[in-house]
Length: 420
Image (cartoon, rainbow, N blue to C red; front, side, top):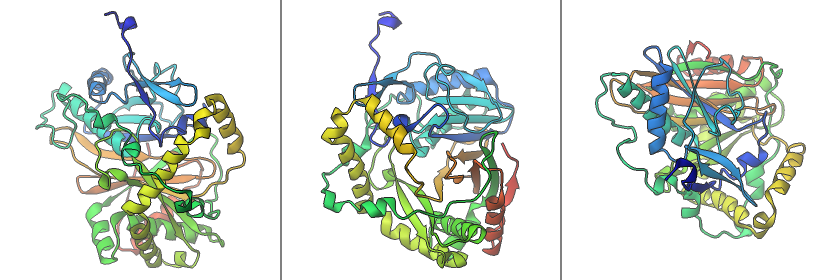
């Protein structure tokens, strides 16, 4: 059968992803970036070959976006993948004409592999699995002394149906509107970070911390790694900004830990951590508050309620009969009236495990930012060291430097890294 006559496979967008292309514009896309720092110069052609091999194992990444009557959908993309030279710019919008329809961009420069992806394709955890497989395959093709594939998707195995599932639907249970806490979902208007919007795009600031140091301090404070860092960030923001509004930090929760699934699509929910001006007077108070809120809000029952709300909305008669152009128009109009509901996002994608010999030295995770959510923070741990990436839409770096100070006061040393 000729390639042009082959029936291409299609996928409906997962529930979480449905609204991303509707609210996105050419200039404002929900992108994030994972960067792999290697132990030597990266060869673009070898990287491209590796990407082609990995995409066979990750078919929900090998897609392009199509318009349906009521929603967008994904269609298998038969085009060969490209690898681009790095522009040195962070999270530039993806031009699908340049990428031949792909909703991600793989770039490289010197010792770095950059993987930028549209959030409709996947969440940070799934993207990390793709990047690890890409690094592993690149190392193998480069002739590196790789030992096995522990911690990395086996490229010799065929993709499973579960990896392509919409896990939100799998675990959905009907929910009554009376069970929905709309006020809790939205909350009051938060404190917003000050700063001058940069005219030349987004930029990043990075630091590294011994993960054992944070883990030990967090344990002593009765907190998790994530709640400890959120507390330190809240204290830093409160000290820099002041004011009578609360600091609100949104934290993505990986639902795969509560609802078993191997999905390589989106499967996260957000927890909204609120820190009052009084709590922000000390790091210890912020850490205690973050630990208590995560324990209360990041439960299986609460997460189920939150994503059930999204599923019910998508399945409503109104959403099924309203044509896609009207949804897009409504989203464009709504953007002018919606107010930001968070001060920042902190996302920790956890610990990276790859086989010895892959040559992976560091991974950095840059989140999308905007004119209102001016600085967001991503964290990745590799070989006992956690790298924090501050992505910002403003010129000022006061928050990052304040965070280093706060960590120092808590007995933790942060080592600043070169920007990328």
